[in-house]
Length: 195
Image (tube, rainbow, N blue to C red; front, side, top):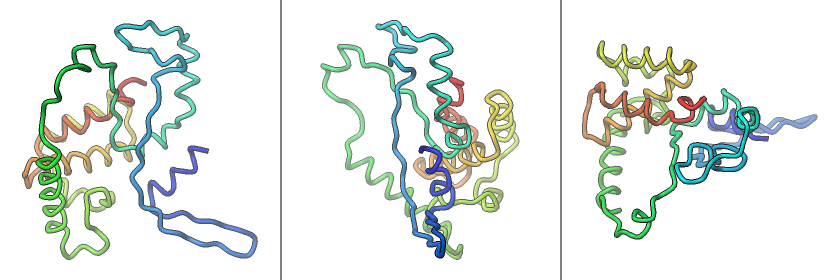
């Protein structure tokens, strides 16, 4: 069932075909999903020990195919909070400042893509756009190539990394992609590193 998400995630539309008719519907969406690290939910936990065998974990993750995972831009493992983290007052940026920074990054992308048909944000970048809008210097290219080799990433996953890096640069107010942007985008491929 999850595999049906692959095409809409990639193309931004859903096709419904019946005997006499085939209809396409727009389906651009943001997929937010979560899963446990294993059937018991404790693999990698620092407090509770996992009771799953390696085979059980392998079967659990086999439900999520590589092609589907390639289409998920951000894959982040979230560890259990420590008791003192639960009880302390929240720190960090306010929602207002985050919203302002995101709006500035969005405006930056809209300005950059003026004159490009059907392109308003980094998520819509196609492979053909990456050479123009996500140029890498030698250090960034070497870093990405090393990650592709080490993690066994597909071309689609490396394109996703570049789109995320472009967004990270926009959030930082940078016009050019830098090594730290690419490195951060690679860090958001947690599940690729776990496999």
